Length: 412
Ligand code: ADP
Ligand code: ASP
Ligand code: MG
Image (cartoon, rainbow, N blue to C red; front, side, top):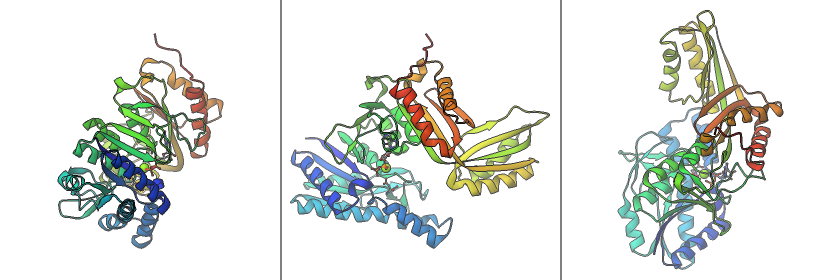
């Protein structure tokens, strides 16, 4: 008998028929003698609709406490519906909101972090022979305020529950058969990976592969939770996210990812002297805006340009803050562009290969795509390009590195 945690995403619970399909899967698993805890998302489109309502009522920046109180309601609907559907099949089920199951978080509304879980509540249900049906994405802080874990946060709820219960496996059910070499909804030639390492998955998640929320991957790595990403519409084996040693196939590039919602800001004529960057970026970080890439040009006659990227949703505010800070440090101008995208290639095999970045730049050049910014690490190369070329860039890079296996010359 195993203890299995299953998480079903929005498309898997999009309507009553699909919820019934999930109920059947859950009941089948329980019928094999396993104990099952299920984490569910809101029905697909529901969270987006709630966010739109929050913005309509509360303006650009609605009160975070009330925003969380509203957007968390999507999951509350699905847990009750799934529990009913399971009961209708003759099995026992008990639903739990984040508060009811003691999912304790910090107080950082809209992007809270899980602090602890009262696993006894879940075990009580399991010991009573019931399936525990748990709302993803939500928790409560020390004062009982409802918090949410950031978009895609149900993945993290599931892994946290699996870690707390010391489950044998955490199955993430979604609308694709696993983790692919790139978004299979954009590139039909994308290939399913049988296994992917935590390191690569972390990079892919942080660079746009939304199939797993980045924090869920970090938690799974930290607690050694066996993570299996698969489809709720088939019985096919999916992708195991696992330790590097357990990945058989070592690809130079195992993933091509993209992020469309980026923006860049360029500050011109900044004095090249100590303290200027700190003064420019402090107001932005104080506003809770995450700066991603930063490029500073070589200085000419004591002044330089600094360009950086922020999430597009934060562009307006970051631009205003940069204009104000730019005036203070005597910059000659601030310009912005919110029609950019970031495209990346990720792969552990890059460590042993020279020329991967060059090959990437050449592939983009062959398509006539101009590279605006570049950043690299040991296992990834990212470039910023004009947004309208995103799909072309992803397809070209996937063709070059994955389909044609463009093994760049090795460094040996
Ligand atoms: P869920 O609602 O189940 O949480 P998400 O929409 O959050 O599902 O994530 C699944 C989606 O992630 C897929 O439909 C796919 O379009 C997208 N995706 C992006 N990159 C990848 C990738 N490399 N592998 C698999 N899916 C990907
Ligand atoms: N419903 C939330 C969202 O759409 C959480 C999730 O689905 O993971 O972001
Ligand atoms: Mg998701």
